[in-house]
Amino acid sequence: MPLPQPCLLCGARDGIRRDGRWHCAVCDWRVGDAPDPDLPPPRIDVVYYLRWRERIKIGTSRQPRQRLTAILHEELLAFERGDRTLEQQRHREFADLREGGEWFRADARLTAHIAGLSGGIRPWDAYARWVADAYRG
Ligand SMILES: [Zn+2]
Image 1 (cartoon, rainbow, N blue to C red):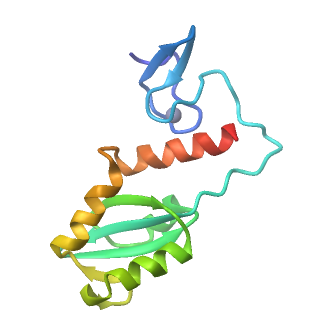
Image 2 (cartoon, rainbow, N blue to C red):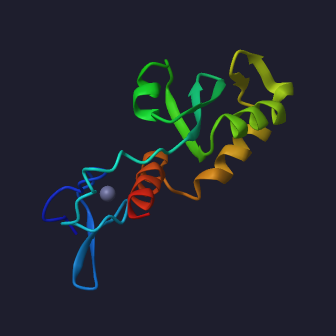
């Protein structure tokens, strides 16, 4: 069902009605609630998986929206919650597929790992939920 107003946190327009209140269908933020303006935006570190042709970049960012616009890619495959430590772990895990820098060959082992991350949720929807969860504390 369409929300009376787009979600304040993630901009989604679909909502669900629960306990007499509208909730965002994507991140579950309660419509009408406003994040405390005195609090800094929550810090959400993610490891991202970006595809360009037959290669996949594994990197990390705490500002994925800005970061991803700066990287040439065809498709965002997944986000995984984690920072530099997890990124380094993934780089070691798939070291045999490394083609240079943070780019890895899109081998079946790597694509299976990525497919297992999403749980059928689109990357930006997953990110919106993490942000909403962090705001809720
Ligand atoms: Zn939302």
